[in-house]
Length: 137
Image (cartoon, rainbow, N blue to C red):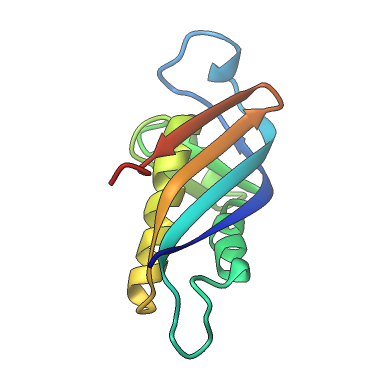
C-alpha cells in the first residue's frame, strides 16, 4: 500500500521572463508558495516516506536567489555580484514546478527513498499557480 504526504514551502526569489513581452520581462521578485504531494513506500525502519525537512531544504535552494533563463544575457552581469540559478527556458511557474519536481524525485532516488512527486503546485501570487499532476500514474 502507498503512503501519501503533503508539504507546503515558501521561498522568495527574483526572476524575469526573457521571451515574454510585458511587465514580467523585467527583473522582479515574488514570494513563491510551493505545495508538494508525494507518494510511495515508507522506510520500513522509520515509517517515514520522505522527511518533511528534506522537501523544505530542496525547495529552499531557490530562496533569495535570482532565477533566469540560461540564455539570458543578464546572467554574466549579475554573476559578478550574486549567484544566479539558471534554467532551460524562462523561469515561469510552470518551469519552476517541473524543476522542483525533478529535484525532489532526484533527491529521493539518490537517498534510496521509494517516493515520487505525484502533484506539485507553484504559486506565483495569491491568485496564480501552475500545477503538475501525476495522480493517474
